[in-house]
Length: 444
Image (cartoon, rainbow, N blue to C red; front, side):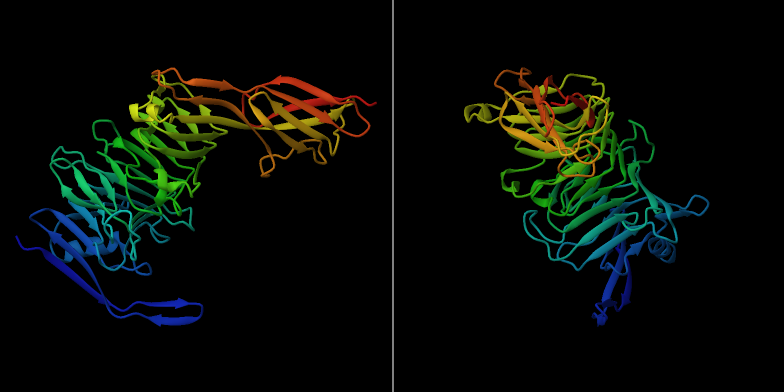
């Protein structure tokens, strides 16, 4: 069967700093390969992205019959693999949902590939192929990408990947393919375990998962996400639910220049939230771990830093071990849980004391923490970078399986203020984030 193609020729004009720049003609193309059942989209620039409306009209015009539209629910169904962009091509942007169609659902009964623009993965991409769900600047645009099965076979989402070995489901990865999800959801069509997505690969840079949800994924939920691709990546306020593994081997030794923080996320009913089988370096803030099989599996080297995170029930115990090469080199993984606290200082009548100096010491550290109270008699709160942050516990892998070294922190809090006797609080152990510790001072 011959591949059928729709060519769209247009000129792109953009306004930049008051200057109109006219680019040469760009040939935007939509192709359908009936033999392989693949719908291909490429050469759509950022200012004129391909949309589901364009794709539907192309299918109708050419009698491809692979794109359906249900107006009553604003749902599109693609009964084919969807390939976005080309390697070595110009930019391709594919947009799901916009101001005119704020509640759009796309069901793809096939694999979704966003091609890299450059090979291999570690190279710097000159062009971009990007799949966008929702609108970063408009939270009212809420979309759904649902992956369905085709002929009872699970399908997946592959970002910055090229189909390579279909039999063993191995794909070449490169640079320049991107996924951005804002106020939207990636899930399976059936939203159950039997119909779950095979896996989601995020091998490209500039991944954006913001105010969104990733759910019903059998395998890895962010496979291929790497630290050295994280300088522009943002993962915040996102739910990872009913999936397999969320994060695996989040960094390599070349990534230490970056400190990217995953904020305000929830990991619920997943297999393993953090799987460290290689070097890992990961920061999480205000995240919740709820009813997972494991919250983490640690067997290599690096560290995990958890700030103000909460932990619910586990279906199994977390796993700690060391690979042989790590043990020989005295390498380990340290997992640190730390919490913000507020120290409140008052006199015996309950009036706040401003400008009190607070010194916090522990046997586990030679460096004390020092803070001062403000006009309300309290140390800085949630809106301040000067808020008191204390390690709660450190878990470090050892050569003995499931017997991590545990360091629990106890603190002595000393408060002094002019005209008052020093007040000392001993054996304070932080249990929850932002708890208020009250010190009452007596006048001299």
